[in-house]
Amino acid sequence: MTHLAEGDKAPDFKTKDQNGNVVSLKDFLGKKVVLYFYPEDDTPTCTIEACNLRDNYTALKKAGLVVLGVSPDDKKKHKKFEEKYNLPFTLLEDPDKKIIDKYGVWGEKNMYGRKYMGLFRTTFLIDEQGVIIKVFKKPKSKIHSEEILKALS
Image (cartoon, rainbow, N blue to C red; front, side):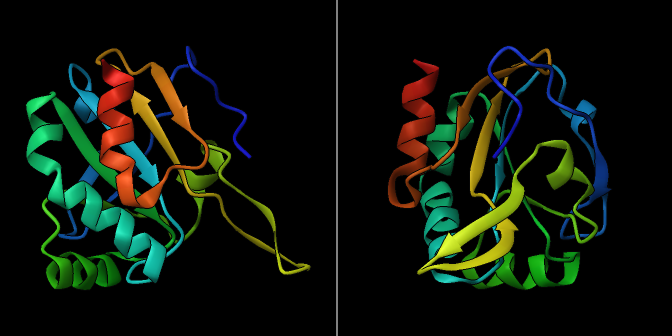
């Protein structure tokens, strides 16, 4: 589970989005960022979370938030996910898990007694100066936008 906490500087990164554009966290200095990590495109819980963010995107934008999703999937898979569910936000590829490692969201998981390595669904709310103001270690996928907006108020 992540070693990062509220008040820590959010680690910078550089990667490509679903359209092949190079994106860096420092591109968003001066804006509040929702950096959400999820295991895989087009899986049930990840889709519920992405669609909740999509359905509440206007409210998130109105609150001054930029939404960035990160998973180990590549830009091609992200593009299919974006198009299939009409996602209005940026999806970032991290097949080498460099960003995932910087944020400490990869580790041993246990499901039904089976241990395996995987991504811990985690969201970081980052302020305009690049400082983490909230960490959601187990976001509720069906109401994640509401959790984020409540944390801002």
